[in-house]
Structure formats: C-alpha cells, structure tokens
Image (cartoon, rainbow, N blue to C red; front, side, top):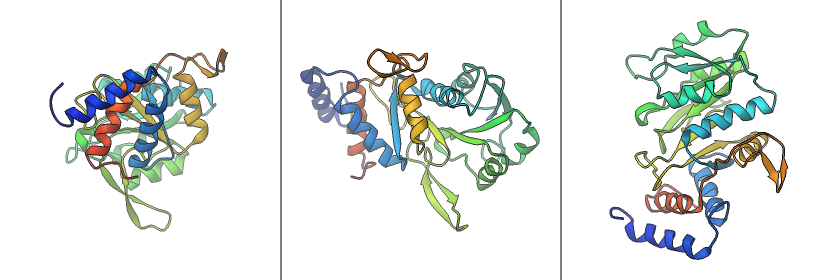
Length: 254
C-alpha cells in the first residue's frame, strides 16, 4: 500500500484486524457520523456500493408506500448505467431527460413536460464533480409533490447554492439537498475506499431505518425480518479507511 496517508491507513486497518470485529461495529458508527456531518445530513447509512445505495433508496420508498412498481422517475439521459439500474431493479420506469449543453447536467427546462400522473421522483446526478441542482428543479418537486433523489457518486464535497424559505441562497453540500442521496466510495471517486463501498444520506429517520434494515437482510433485530432484504453492508476496514481520508483531507469538522 503506497500513496497519500499510507501510515494512517495502515494503522486503521491494523486496528480493525486486531479488534476482531469486522462488520457493523465502531468503525462504521464513526464514519457514518463523520460523513453525515460532512454532507450536512442527519443520517448516513453505509452499504456495499454506490449502486446499492440508490437501489435501497427506491426500495425503501416502495416499502414505505411512497412509490410502487410502474411509477416513473425522471433521470438524466447521460448518466452512468448504475442510476438507471437502481430504478429498473425496483420495477420503476426511468424517464430520460437530455442534458443542458452548457453544463452537461440535466436540463431543468425539459423536466416539467415529462411529468405524468405516474411520476413520483426526480433523480439528479451530480456529474463530473459538478452540481446538477437548480432552484427550478426544487420548485418543480414542490409543485408536483415529487421526491428529489441525488446520485452523488461523483461529487463528494461539491457545494451548491440552494434557495431557502426566506428566498436567500445558502451553500449546501450535494447529498444534502434532496430527500435522499446515494454515494459511491469506489476507489476512483473523490472519496475512495480500498474496494467497493457506498452510503445513503437523508434527513428522514423513517427512510434511514428502512435503508439500514433492507441492507441487513431485511432485519431490524436478530432473526426478525421486516422486509425481504439483502446483504449490503459496509465492512469495518472500508469504513476505517474512508474515515482516515475524510479527516486527513480536512473535510470532516468535529
């Protein structure tokens, strides 16, 4: 292992190995708390990868009765396939919107004409480390009662001006703007693990609990399964490594 923060990462890995606790332990708790603080969300739930993070958001909304198979999700046409797979995996229908040529992000002016009685969400993708959110998108979501979901796989640390209730704009981190956001920690991302990893951030406690349960076989308590879930957990080594990078790059403020 070579490169930036090598000694700190080796020490973190050694700490986990010596602890004998490799899943759902103190390292996950620490990283989730630090990453939630960094993003500016109330909750962070670690999972196996960025695709799963998006899958669990949509699946949780289905389990909570907010969406159902056959509903539509508006999504940029030029995103990576993972964004689309998360929608179709849940029996939802992606409705593709072409990008704005000046930004290569989803074109806000093209969204409203595609909204139907089956539309339940807009999924924006912060491509190329740049913010895809605009106040117009926020206004459309509010007007039609749509969920705003962020794919933040490429934009850890990006800030965006978001108009508040007082009409003044404040800078918010991507991943804290919508109702929920999926994050990837693939090694090549802005914040990368030593393998795969992902997380969901949200301010909604019910959604956070549903995501955590779904990603743990559907279980909230040992041998009690509320949902038909899957094994999609962030392991302790990846959580420890991610927390080292988060802290030492000056991105986490305690």
